[in-house]
Amino acid sequence: LKQDDPDCVLPLLKRLLEEGCRPNQRASGAANHQHRTCLQLLCNAGATRCVHFLLNFHQATYGVSAVLGEGGRQSESRSEAMAVLQSVPCREHMDVNTVDGGGWTALHVAVAPNGANVGKNQIIVALLIAAGAVVTRKQSSGMSPVSLAAQCGDSKSLVTLVKAGAHIDARDASGNSVIKWALVASTAPPGPN
Image 1 (cartoon, rainbow, N blue to C red):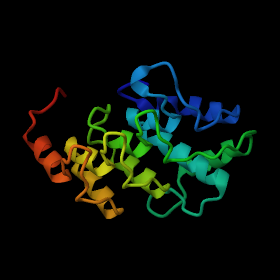
Image 2: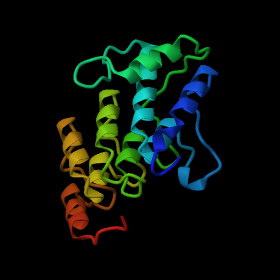
Image 3: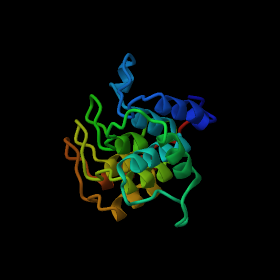
């Protein structure tokens, strides 16, 4: 994916789904991706339009009542998802809470401090929550999405997670609190941008 335009793969994503690719197909080969799903890789890249499309495709496939639109109207992404859905031979369930080899869900990946779009994924976080992402699930080292958001100083995602029911008093496997991670992030030197 291109760093400056991670959504450039949207036409390819649509084509792959039309050809029957499974949305929960895991990527393999790259050790740092730990067999992540398409949704997790798109979250890591910050491909907001692709994530929006894939979640709408999933909801259109399974008749989920919540429409991921903007401002209460049906979104262009949902219309596109419905159009692609008409020609899809495989209707595999896509679980937004699928974990990779390290216990990470798409929500963990979206707020991860080492992601390509640190602090810029609050839209993806909101989309994942609307699609049913579990905001309290911890990955293998005990980090919850709210802890990861605090660790990278992503206050917008942190607030979104707390409003959705994330525990502000969550602790990781080492006993570190969300507050500690937020303080560490606030005193860290700025990264290269």
